[in-house]
Image (cartoon, rainbow, N blue to C red; front, side, top):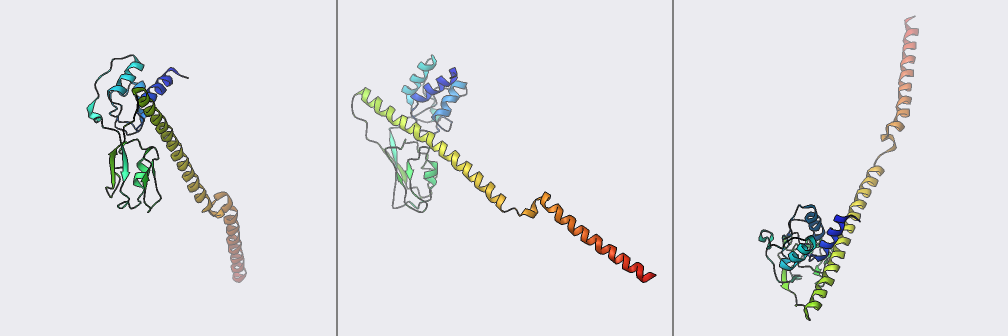
Length: 224
């Protein structure tokens, strides 16, 4: 494994896995890649706040720095809730969720799997009915170590769901391309193929030429 890949995995492991995009990248892992490449700074993750910045700085052997608030401010942990009376089943929120934490079919009521919701808020803007709200989650109980373990467990699960979603979307895209290619192939008539069309064209041309020869011969007989 390359040295940079080790850093990417290590940084991704300490990010909160909200997959919210506030850092300017589409997910926590892309942000980790950008940090290692030098394209992003260590203080662009509002959900990670000062503790996340400190952990990244320690991994890279650099000094921590204040959160860059241009990317947002830290907020209390929250999850999305859908008002079932207003939901019209448009599926916009389903498509927006980076960890597949919203379930529901088209034109049917949707619901949030609150245990899986990362609080990214990406589902709010696409909702045409404004029926999604963020509500505070119950604080984890226990010692600092127990709370840290609970947060890590939730983050690890969110990472897996994020990666699974990316794989699912890639598979669906591949299947759509294959379906379009198959349909296009099925709509092509054999005579649309030039190599198959030429023999038929040649036969028709031979018939025309033969008819012209017969007509010329008949005119010659008449003129005698």
